[in-house]
Image (cartoon, rainbow over all chains, first blue to last red):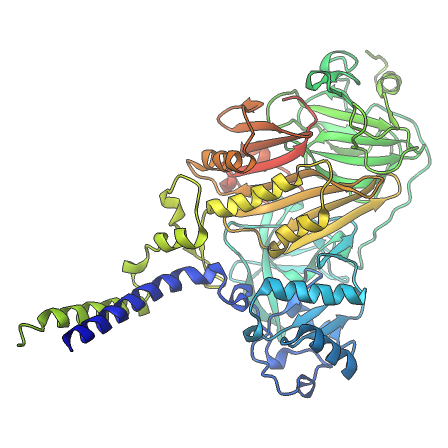
Length: 409
Length: 230
């Protein structure tokens, strides 16, 4: 009797102790992805077109919304409509995804989808996603790779409103600190801890994210996520600009390079990697953060991207058909520079950068291509590791240098 | 008889107190490191106090560690290792990072082809600003041009990240360049892997990431196609 009582007490004691660890660990370990996703749709929030009768007796208290267009779904519900109320489609979905209940909602203007599913019926999020993804791909309705939608265009993030300005709030979300302009650049802040807030504005629930405005001296504030988008995904953003015809040529740096770009490691075809590679550019040594100029009229065909050790590059198709890669510039976006935007001769395209290993002087790494080739400029298959139509830019640079500065190396 | 059962009453009382502590989220149970270790199969040394550090997420009430666990770092570095090849299986790569909610944009033009920019909305714990640039060649094969991620600053962060990189890549060998702030290694076939303790210049004018001066010292890791020898 005594022993039984003792073992019972010890068992209870151990169970309580073990439970304490589980409570500590599981929330971020992913107990129930519904919790981890931290968003739910409730019956009253369902978009027009989904009637509770359609759900046929299922409880609608906890739903996990997923999005394939990377938008916060709860913000977009009012814009969505039920695409297929056809019972057969509904049944087909259920058959594919049994025992899960799938509700599919398609917005009017893009290839996006909302999936609601009963959390308590899913054993594994991963299995569910794979199953759903395969069902969607089978229908061949989405341009996807492994269920991830790919948006065409620039990844530049901007304020995407139809016409008006956007309220930027303080951290309490109660006070508007300023108004951001339509299409103004923003940089979403990712802290090491998740940072997201929600509040109801005008009867709608909005998720707010922390952003920085680079054109406002890096001022920060909170904005509704629904109005921040990549340029690629912003319908009202103008995405194409016509280039001007060929104009006068000029040298791509503001002043003459400090070193001869036709000698040493700076020259085109200098040996790299002990002779295993050739240098594919002319390195124009200048001063950090000095302006880099467009050598002629043209159009930006590849917006600013990471190039090498903390520097960036932009690709321009000039009006004579040649392509230039302006490499090792800083990440500072010059006014009027963006995907598909047109450029004029001498327009500032960026600023002289410096690689963060400290190996080299600040420079513009200038690559030139005839434009006869296609595909990415960086390729394998030759010692330059560049596309076959790569040109030695030295001769052109010499001419442009003389035209621009009246002397040349 | 009563004396004989005193110790049973004592155990029962202790259990009751533990139970109360648990239900009230009491401090005596905060040290969950042993179970964390077990659940995450932490394999990399050292087992520092930062592994136990847990902060409370204000918006979602979810407890998250402030610094990346070695296993989380290893996941990211494994993705880097997977990508450092002549040809990248985009499908496989996206599967690896799928839980981090990747946002993929494609810049395509008739002159220089396709470039995919992949960023994540839900970074792995203790990391942020994951960014990858993948190009397609004329045969339609993909290859990685750049991949980077950041980790929280700390006295030992640089060494911890370097150790984790060595552990994941296995054959990094001697660094190409090594200072207190920067280390780089050659990774075949044609990549450079580098770690940088970010300084004020690094924080300026990044067109993708937002920074303040408080981010000085953040650790940035990148894998890129090689341009210079250094």
